[in-house]
Each structure stands twice: as structure tokens, then as C-alpha cells.
Length: 484
Ligand code: HEC
Ligand code: HEC
Ligand code: HEC
Ligand code: HEC
Ligand code: HEC
Image (tube, rainbow, N blue to C red; front, side, top):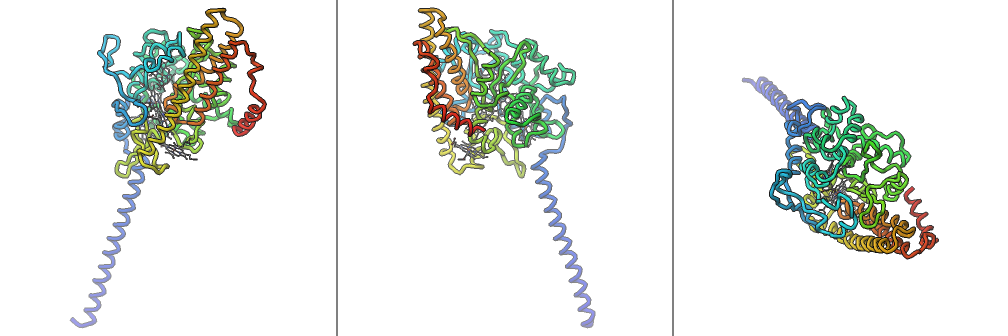
């Protein structure tokens, strides 16, 4: 072999090596790129469709075949595990099942914890049975078995927030959700609940074809449209006009809100036409002339508030910063490259690290202490307001027993009605003041103020004499300006 030939061979070998190297590198890069793409897609649209889902798929177990991680955490709402913090939000009592109530575990009675409740709600179903909430898994059976349903006649309207509804609306309304909703409301509860198969399910919050978040409750769709209109946004439809971030709250706001049954049709209605500050809501009820019940000890026309989580959150610092219900109550869990939203809806104190530290920088203990501090101050003010209300009720009762329903007693009723609604509003809100700490304190101050005025009214002090001072009026004007 001469040198020329050797050199030619070398060049050929080198060329082949180069081609091989390039091929290997290309293949590696391509493979890597594909794998990144795959992981990205995985993170976005987690699973291939194993089963086909459509508008008739109510059973969450079927959805679970396509989305096992979400299904698994969704089913955890069945487990009753206490969390840390000031309040034991999850310690059920065991009970011996009976023929008409097969439950072996049940949440503790709120009425037993605080005898003042029986005065606040004297003469109303709530004073008979009102328990702590537990996981979504139980929402249907807890509603069917409460004494408020067993011993009192309730309308089908109750069902709207305690079952998976889209297929029921479709069935009863022949494909028209609004017509189905009206039908449910006009039925008795006993009749309506026969249609219910499941507690809130995947289909209530997700479009079965695209998995996009959606709202399915006509009461919320009407309510949010009215609320947006009060803020100058007309014809708002959450399913087409809401941002993705808003939807992460709106799916919860279909149920975790203050509501009432409007008119003869018992239409489920959210009182947001004038806005979502408690003064707007109270003013709405005053104009409607709505009354839930007549007070058993004083005869006053009363309003009942219930679980205004969305309403109070709306007035807090987290809402202002775009922090949604899902951010805290459905934190991401990593599963490989997949980001899975925790569907075990419960207290975020069980998951402070995942729930809070995406934005805050503190230890778990420190974060829990911050929550406890807010809740401790809340309980302090709430208890003073509660005592004031019970004292007002006692005074009205005594005046009535002595002199009947005098003009002053009737004036005092108005103050009792307001004080009771405002106290109930923050009492029946389940975060113990956390969702909007200073807003909640402000409301409690209104309660104590209304109780004081009610007691003065009984002494014959005129409404004019109790008018706010010039200073207060000037300050109120400034506040009104900040609210735009
Ligand atoms: C707008 C939605 C909505 C409607 C309508 C509704 N609920 Fe509820 N209900 C909830 C939410 C949210 C909770 C959990 C928060 C809580 O317990 O405060 C709940 C909790 C409950 C509980 C468990 C805690 C307790 O209070 O003992 C029972 C029982 C119950 N509801 C019965 C009823 C009955 C009866 C009606 C009809 C009169 C009704 N619900 C109508 C949303 C609703
Ligand atoms: C269809 C109505 C409905 C929707 C939608 C809904 N909830 Fe609930 N939620 C309820 C009811 C009813 C209960 C009480 C069930 C019981 O006590 O049996 C409840 C209970 C809870 C609890 C108490 C559980 C515990 O461990 O103490 C939390 C927390 C909660 N919901 C958060 C949320 C969040 C966050 C969303 C939105 C992602 C949401 N819910 C959407 C009706 C609803
Ligand atoms: C910034 C975080 C955060 C946001 C946002 C938030 N929550 Fe909460 N929520 C909490 C904390 C903290 C508690 C108190 C838990 C405790 O005391 O154990 C709580 C309590 C609750 C409870 C009572 C839970 C129980 O165990 O009884 C419900 C129901 C609830 N929130 C619903 C909502 C809804 C609905 C929204 C949106 C409108 C929302 N939360 C927004 C942090 C948040
Ligand atoms: C009360 C409303 C609600 C219910 C019920 C619900 N989800 Fe979700 N789901 C959410 C929210 C909120 C998100 C966060 C979506 C986002 O920000 O894109 C989510 C996200 C998801 C995602 C996207 C990936 C992820 O984990 O973030 C999948 C898949 C999913 N849910 C499946 C299910 C399945 C399966 C069920 C029934 C077993 C179900 N969901 C029930 C509210 C709900
Ligand atoms: C997505 C971001 C985000 C998440 C998640 C979040 N926060 Fe916040 N938080 C904020 C912002 C922003 C503020 C307002 C800070 C400011 O402007 O001073 C705030 C304020 C607070 C405050 C002060 C409240 C007040 O009224 O002054 C507390 C306490 C708090 N957060 C606790 C929590 C807890 C507990 C969690 C988890 C359960 C949590 N946060 C989750 C963003 C978040």
C-alpha cells in the first residue's frame, strides 16, 4: 500500500466517522426534542382517551379511566383526615346506623358548640340541625339525611349544589339546561333527589370533549352576569368571556355562595345585582322585601346567610391579586413531568407547602401561625358581636312581653334583622375570617353597632338621634370613592 492509498483510506474512514457522529448527534437531539415535546404535551393534556366521554357520562369512575391521577385525588374527599390549625375541621363522630339514617359517621353539630346559635336562629330549621361540612363525597347523602330535609318540607332547589346536575337538567328540560333548572326548582326535594346519581362530578366543571373548565349552573350564570353588569361589564357569559384564571374560582362559586329561593318558582338566586359587598347584598334583600323566617323569640322578619366563601373572598387581598380558590385548595402535585391539580378539596393547611409557598416564603409552621393569628382575632370579635346580638334579642323579648309589639319594638326588629344577617354571613363562611381578614372585622363592627342601636331604639331614642356624625359621613364618602 503506498502513502497515497493510505491517505485516501484515512479520508474515507474519517468521512464515514463524521457521518456516523452527525447521525448519532442528530438522532439524540431529535429524540430529546421529541421527549421534551411529549412531556410538554403530557403536562398539557395528560392522558390519551382510553374511553370516550360525552355529555351523558356522569360517573366519575369512567372519567377516571382517562385521568387516573385526578380521579384518585377526587376520591380522597371520602377520607376524613383532620388537619393542623386552630380548628379541628374534620373529626367526625361515630353513630349507630338506624333504618332511616344508615350513616356510621357524622360531623359534629354546630348548634351544640354554641348555645347562642339557638337564639340567633330561634324558630328556624337551622337551629335543629346544622353540622360542620365535610368532603364532596358526602354532599348528597348529608343533604338527604339532615333533619332540615327529614323534618321540614324543602324544594328541589336544594339539589342544585349537592349533586351532579348537567344530565338531570338535560333530561328534565329535554336538552334545555335552563328549562331543566326551572323544573328542578319547582319540584319537592323528595321528588327531585330521585334523579340524582352522584355528588358533584367531573362533568360539572369540565367539558367532556376538551376538558376545559366550564360552569354548568344557571343560577351562577345569571348571578355573575348581574354582578359584572353592576361593575359596568354588560352581557357577560362566563363560559365564553371569563379568563382562565377567573374560571379557577368560578367553578367553586357555583355553590360556595350566599343564595336565596326567589318567588313562587323557588328559583335559586344569587343576590349580586347591586354588587358583592355585604351592604350591596343587604340592600338587594331590603328592596326585594325578602324574609326567610319570623324570629321565634322576637317576631322579627329575618334573613339567613349561608357559606359566602366566594362573596367574602371577592373582598379580600388574595382576590385583588388574582389568587384563585384552586391556587390554595387545588395545589399542583408533580407526577413525573405531569402537573396534577389536587382534586381532594379540603383545608389548605394540610398542604401549606404546595398551597402557599408558590408565592410566600416562610416555613410551614410560620404560615400556619399566620392563619391562626387571623382566625384568633376573628373569633375574638365574633364572640363580642354574638354576645351583643343575644343581648339585643333578650331585650326585645322582654319589651315585647311587657308592652307588646310597640313601634319601638318594630324599629328594634330592623336592627336585629341587620345584625343577625351580618353576623351569620361571617359565621357561616367557613374560613373563620381567613378569606378576607379586615373585611370580616369591618362586618363584625357593623353587627355590634346595629345591636347597640337596636337597644337604644327600645329606649325610645329616635333614628335621627342615631344618625352617623358628620365626620363619619365624610369618611364614608371617601370609602365610597375607593370602591369606585
Ligand atoms: C348555592 C348552593 C347551595 C344550595 C342551594 C344548598 N346548599 Fe347545602 N351546602 C352548600 C355548600 C357550599 C355547603 C358546604 C359549606 C357549609 O356547610 O357551610 C353545604 C352544606 C350543606 C349541609 C352540610 C352541613 C350542614 O349544614 O349541616 C347540609 C345538610 C346542606 N347543605 C343541606 C342543604 C339543604 C337542605 C338545602 C336546601 C334548603 C341546601 N343545602 C341548599 C351549598 C348549597
Ligand atoms: C356542586 C356544588 C359545589 C361545588 C361546585 C363545589 N363545592 Fe365544595 N362543597 C359543597 C358541599 C355541598 C360541601 C359540603 C359537603 C358535606 O358536608 O357533606 C362542600 C365542601 C367543601 C369543603 C370542605 C371539605 C373539608 O374537608 O372540610 C371545601 C374545602 C370545599 N368544598 C371547597 C371547594 C372548592 C375549592 C371548590 C372549587 C374547586 C368547590 N368546593 C366546589 C358544594 C360544592
Ligand atoms: C390564599 C389561599 C386561599 C384562597 C385563595 C381560598 N381559600 Fe378557602 N381557605 C383557605 C384557608 C387557609 C382556610 C382555613 C382552613 C382551616 O381553618 O383549616 C380556608 C377555608 C375554606 C373552607 C372551609 C374548609 C374546612 O375545612 O371547613 C372552604 C369551604 C373554602 N375555604 C372554600 C374556598 C373557596 C370556594 C374559595 C374561592 C372563592 C377559597 N376558599 C379561596 C385558603 C384559601
Ligand atoms: C369542582 C370542580 C371540579 C371537579 C368536580 C373536577 N375538576 Fe378537574 N379541575 C378543576 C380545576 C379548577 C382544575 C385546574 C384547571 C386549570 O387551571 O387548568 C382542574 C384540572 C383538571 C385536569 C387538568 C390537569 C390538572 O390536573 O390540572 C384534569 C385532567 C382534570 N381536572 C380531571 C378531572 C376529573 C377526571 C374529574 C372527576 C373525577 C374532575 N377533574 C373533577 C376543577 C374540577
Ligand atoms: C398565587 C400567589 C399566592 C398564593 C398561592 C397564596 N398567597 Fe397569600 N398573598 C399573596 C399576595 C399577593 C398577598 C398580598 C401581599 C401584599 O400585597 O401585601 C398575600 C397576602 C397574604 C396574607 C396577608 C393577608 C392580609 O390581609 O394582610 C396572608 C396571611 C396570606 N397571604 C396567607 C396565605 C396562605 C396561608 C396561603 C396558602 C393557603 C396563601 N397565602 C397563598 C399571594 C398568594
